[in-house]
Amino acid sequence: MTTDAAHQYSQAAKINELISRLDLAQSELGGTVANLLDAIAAGPGEAVLLAEVDSRWTLIAAIDRVGTILPALDNAFALDDFALLETVHPDDVLRVATTVKESLTEQRPFDLQFRVRRRDGDWRFVRDQGQVIVDRRTRPQAVVHRLTQIPASTASDFGDEAKTLRELIRQLETEQRMTACEIHDGFVQLATGALMHLEASDIVNEETCQAKRLLREALGEARRLMGGLQPSGLEEAGVPAAIDDFLATANGFIDIPVALHLDAQFPRLTPTEESTLFRILQEAINNACKHSQSERIRVRLRYLDGIVDAEVRDWGRGFECEETSHGGFGMSSMRQRAKLLGGRIQVTSAPGEGTIIRFRFEATR
Image (cartoon, rainbow, N blue to C red):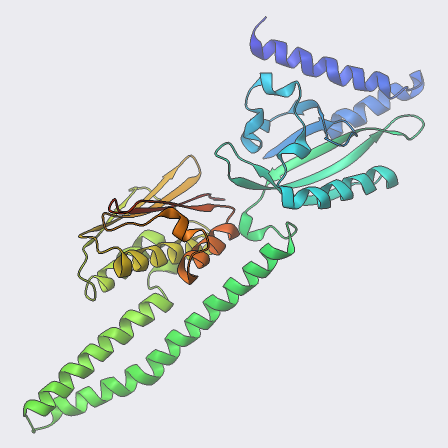
C-alpha cells in the first residue's frame, strides 16, 4: 500500500470511528452521515480539519490543502499527534480557545481570525469558520475547523495591538501625504517664483548668483523630502519603481552608491503591503547612509513561492546586535511595520563587518 493510500485509509477509519461515537439510531444514520460529509467537504481555497473537543483541538482527520495553510501538516507522519491549538500564536490562544469553548457549550457555529505558525517560524493569518458535531444526545463529539488564509492587512480579529498599529500607520501615511502637498503648494511654489524672478532680473552679481544657487538647492531638498513623504510611482508601478525613484533622488544627496537588485518578475502586492515594504526599505537605506560609513549599499528584493524577501546590506563599520534590542525610532518603526504584515525584521551585524537588515513576509496576492 502506498503512503497516500495508507493515509487516506487512516483518515477514513478515523471518520468512521467518529460516526460510531455519535451513537445514532439506524433511521438517523444516513442523514447524519450525509450532513457530516457535507460539513467536512473542503471548498475552493479551504483546508478542513476535524478535531476532538479536548483542550488541544487534537486532530481526528485532515481534508484537502492542509499542508498549504498549515505547513506543519505537509506530510502524513505529522497527523498522529497534531493539535491545532498548539500552532496558534500565543497572543491569540486564550481568545480563540474561549470562543470555541463557548460554541461547544451553546452548540453554535463560530467564526474566528487568528495566526498560525508557518514553516519558516513566522505567522500566517487564517480565518476559521467552525461548527460542532454532536451525538444523538446532543453532546459535542468533534469540531469542524474550516480554514482559509487571509491577508494580514485585513485581519480584523487578532488583537487590539494590531488594530491600533494599523490605524496609527494609516494616520501617519495620511499626514505624510498632506505634508508633502503642503510643501509643494507652499514653499516650493514660493521658492520657484523667487528663483524665476531672480533669473529674469537684469541684475547679475555675486549675491544674486549665490541666491539662485541656494534657491535651487532648497528646491532640490524640498523635492527630496516630498519624494520620501509621498513616494512617486508606488501606486502606479509598485515597490521596485518607487525604490528606484527614491534611490535616484537620494543618490544626489549622499556620497554612498546604492545598487538595487530585484527579481525581474517581482509582482504587484496589496496597497498596504507595498506601502509597508517601501517604508521599511526606505528607513533601512536611510540608516545605512547615515551611520554605516560604508563605501557601498545594496538593496535586494526577491519573491519566491509567495514569500517577499527584502534585504538592505552595507559593508561599513557594523555594530553589536545587542545595541538594537531596544533600538532607536527608526528600528522600532521598521519592526512595528513588519508586525503589521505578520513578518519580522532580522538584523545581522558585527563591528567592522557591515550590517544586513532583512525583512520577510508572506504576500497575499
